[in-house]
Amino acid sequence: KQEVTQIPAALSVPEGENLVLNCSFTDSAIYNLQWFRQDPGKGLTSLLLIQSSQREQTSGRLNASLDKSSGRSTLYIAASQPGDSATYLCAVPGNLFFGTGTRLTVIP
Amino acid sequence: DTAVSQTPKYLVTQMGNDKSIKCEQNLGHDTMYWYKQDSKKFLKIMFSYNNKELIINETVPNRFSPKSPDKAHLNLHINSLELGDSAVYFCASSQERQARTNEKLFFGSGTQLSVL
Image 1: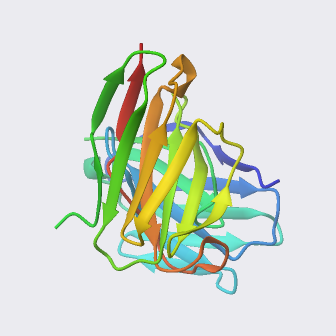
Image 2: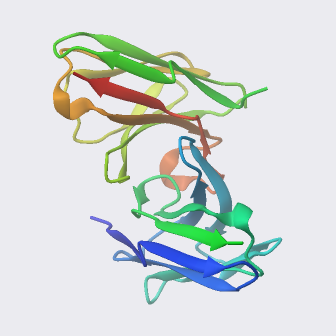
């Protein structure tokens, strides 16, 4: 059964810093991987979806990479802002197995 | 124009009661889901329906019964509520079937269930 791990569980950075969030999964036979953002008391918002044939996806200041062979994905956030503070979760495939998330705090 | 809406947002009830959570999506999606997020923020899929047909049914007590009157609605009925059922329940939808979808998942804002 797929297991998804996200490290670190929590991360605090000063505003403007670039950062990387990590996602590891045990079964590389996946159709896709999805990164989500969850704000307190809210549902999840899909940020990026990477299909198994792709190596990365970009949206604004966000860039997600996928390395199926090593069972890893990273979410790169450039020039972080206080509004980026939230919990970030990955899921593989994008609807089934979720990590427990990384709680990001961007300090003004 | 909420894409995926679920009601109620909060539900507080006594052990042993029966309750329902409603979910509706106006995105024209074929597939809907129910997830449970526990106190440790671990999110786990419970059910998935595609065009009113059950396609995923994870190991969930049979006290939980999803009902899909049409493909825009997926309601969750819970009988004989227990303390351990306390969690946040999320409804979601996507365009295609779960296993093959390359479409993004859209979530409702969640229903916080507290069983006393």
